[in-house]
Image: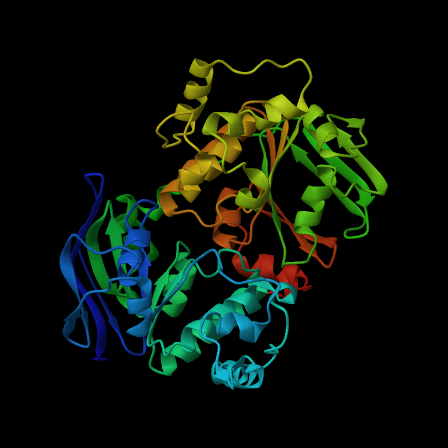
Amino acid sequence: MSEVLVRLEGITKSFLGVPVLRGVDLDLRAGEVHALMGENGAGKSTLLKVLAGVHRPDTGRILLGGNEIVFSAPRAAQAAGIAIIHQELNLLPHRTVAQNVFLGREPVRRGRVDRRAMESETRRLLEWVGEEGIEPGAEVAGLSVAQRQVVEIVKALSTDAVVLAMDEPTAALAEHEVALLYGLVSRLRDRGMAILYVSHRMREVFDLSQRVTVLKDGAFVACSPTGELTSDQLVRHMVGRPLATLYPERASEPGQVRIALRGAGNGRVRDLTFEVRAGEIVGLAGLQGSGRSAIARAIWGLEPFTSGVLELDGKPRRISNPRTAVRSGIGYVTEDRKGNGLALRQSVRDNVLLVRRAGLKGTAARRTSDLIGLLNMVAVAARGPQQEVRYLSGGNQQKVVLSKWLAVRPTVLIVDEPTRGIDVGAKQAVYQLLRTLASDGVAVLMISSDLPELIGMSDRILVMHQGVLAGELPANASEAAVMGLATGHRIGEVA
């Protein structure tokens, strides 16, 4: 058994008298990836902050190398070799890689920052983690999200970290970038680091981790070797119900064609011909850059089609901007809910009414009682309609995004990565809401990089490859068939 580098015993933490952690135990071992799972609100983030020295536990203790230690501040945890990489990356975009890595700890020579030493050490660390394609002198603004994550990891290593905690590290990554992160995490593990990996994505947990700890309502539920668990058992630990109930039953027969593309294209996609009917959820698959999101943006008028025809309920329509799209009955849930889907410093009420107020003529604001009924229908957990959205969990924020479209009742709804960064319980609520909308006659076009989600929710699956429609697959198609088309193979070529 590997050496235990850090052990948390009986950790409790309350805020304003409300218990958030209830006697949690966790140990992190050298050369091991330890996954931490649980629904939003289970206490994962608070536990990370206790480990990072942001919060001091009310009771319990932290052992480092067998000796009890008290972190008075984050710098104390950092000095002890513990580094945390948060979901929201904390880099200065207009500084170089090396400047970010040594921010606040710049080497000095003769009274001036020793830039050469800083870049030399950064290059050594990049080589150590096997990422030699990033230049220490490059500006961070020009890097991809995956490369920025590498910079965060190198920044942690520059402090001599031996324990690395990663919070939802793939939430903002494209599919091909996830593979790069896999390789980096595996290399760090093989070099003796203890890695705490927080994720909602079960595939990543089973691919990368050796053990899994599950929290529920702030309490320790289970810790098991990953190889001894099934997906169903893991979901039962987290939410108390089996995986089979995650996806709601499909509707019976679809209705009339709500939206159709006939030879549509622009600079990003070309010659698109397909239909989505009332009552259908049609999945849209493809690798990053294949044109999936470009279709959504074109339909919604952000990057309009320049050729072909778009039809709504059998009639040709020209959608030149989002306002026209909204007035035509088209809704769009962007993949970036925080950046483009919500006004984070505004209330739940104002966010739900954003589209209704801005996009439609002659519509009055909903009464508070109507609004509360709508929020109850989608089970938004908030103190009330006046609570600022930024204080809600990721799952509840996504429900608010969907609620603003419920407030205007679109006939076509496009959802791009609808469950990115939310837990299993919240995913089920979103799935049920999408299926309810479809049952009410809405045509849903769902873009997702999560293949089990896409297969579990879709009535049909359209697959994109290099800007064109590579093919269509029926419900319950295999992941191999989807990936075969997405990578340019014919269905018959996929085993």
